[in-house]
Image (cartoon, rainbow, N blue to C red; front, side, top):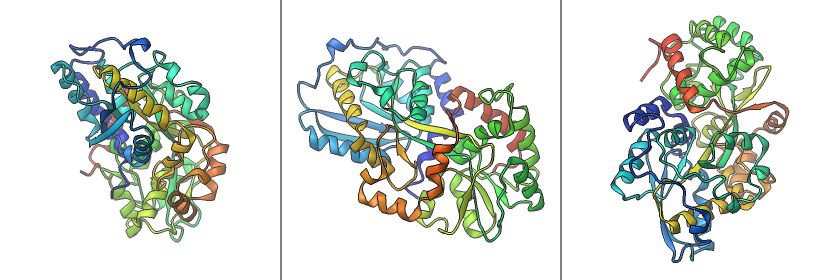
Length: 408
């Protein structure tokens, strides 16, 4: 199911950390690491058109490839060709470090989620873009949607956010089996107790909806510190242990939960805006399923970024900066509506669905939900946990919740 790749944003952040450790540990600089080139040494555009080798470790090209292709058409004097490579997020740190140590940097731009971003920063593999080249991105923070601007802060100046979505947590259910969906975590627990084996969420280490439910519960339950899974999630861990008594097993990925909902083996699952819309577009889940939210609702937001490896030439860096700036234009951001899998998608303000390609407008008209607009505007939005804290949360979940019930 080609469109369902956005969970790779969080596919084993723990794995990214292990790669980072193997490459020298957090903060260990690569042997060829150099400081960022001065703005004066980076031309306004390359002396000659360049070929960009773009590595996608987040499934991001499904949202942004059209933007990139548009740039090539509009600016053949800057970029004459682009090669695309996709790889699992945990492989990025080792790949970039090997290139840098050999003095042969072949990756010119990386499209990543928070996992690859964290590994790149920890291993000193990325070019610091802000504030060094802030003149290339006038009014960057002011142009972002407010929650997207908050996600940009997580990049620490090493990445430029390209796409954003409020994510969840949401519940997706068969209305014939669940006529009155739970409206609070306590009601969900009571429903699960009365219907054992009929609620499901996937292993958070490899599931956007599973991870979003995990990070959203501290807000729903009123935990002492929603940003501290080690010391601030007492209510969350207790709740998940109780809920787990009535969950048969935790699938290894979200797609299995969708198939189980479609087959009737479960009646309700954790979901997000994109995971609700896109599987119905693909026909994985019937279009008659419904979604609901729990109170007190807090969205947990997510984003994907462009990062530049250290060691690229000044001409390549110039082209990278020009391309990223292009991708942040409202006319290009509208392409991010796509088939709804990162819904809405645009990270900058002033981008309406009416600006999106006709295909995207038709998809959202048929499979979108009118309530999403009001829900997104109505409820507060919280940033995802930084990747190191996600690693801690996943580890605790593995040991205290998922142990013995995860399914490969």
